[in-house]
Length: 408
Image (cartoon, rainbow, N blue to C red):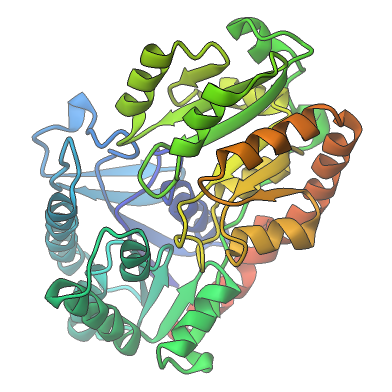
């Protein structure tokens, strides 16, 4: 089976959608399929291209056996709603042209966001006479409205119209959670047309994990300090204001907050640290793989934060890595969010309402005083995440692609 996947994020991007796209393509390649990835030059989460990629219009490379075609796209240094639209539109145009130049695939797959990829996928599907799957990592219009980034009006109607068109035009519509496929049905899509395709993870054997203490020693963190870690994109949707508020009011000297990542809000966090002189808050850039693993091993709990209204269908992929490393979870999210439901049902952490810094402080102090409970949450989480291993998640989706392609 020949598969062409089109999405704006891919390796070497370390967080967000990129690792998910990479895992899928490399899995399909390992099963003997001919896999091509059409993507952009790396830019996420720093919103900055690598120096060697600036000015390049296209490239072709082999990455772990996958043929990867990269297309030029506009990357704004300070993304706004309008600039993000231009950013996505530029990739939609160049990736469409690239797919038209490539030999026909048996089945196409596009990963949204960008939402407008659904239109270009329909055109490619029509002209190449092959079906396409529209895979959604984030319900863009719903999230933008919930966060207040979009107000009801003509632009919102256009985005919902594009979303509806993509769903109707695709042979299948897939999403990363059952809540997301339920949302498709609520939007008028037949259940038989939907596929639940969660993001996957690799659970490392315990004996392969780094020894404890390396990260703490490197950053001057005492062995008796409780480390609460946030790692990932530092953007608007993450609701990070609650973390610097917690650092300001946290009285316990035994609790250290570590924020590791990059994104649109990093400069603001740095300014807040300098202004407030926050000694219990450590802000780090994205870490290389081994240092990242050492950081996870030395953390006592990992925080996953969301803005109110943003998590109704969204299932954060960083949760899977957190659980695979046996860390307890502190979810700062709406009670009805997919994340909160998973934490409560799985029993591997605690849930705190968004923007409630006092409740978060109280919960961190409670966990810091209960090391045995925190360790048990980590053990429970490692067992829970087994359902998201690649060997569980990938085969059903591969089978759905083969059925659509008509190739045995």
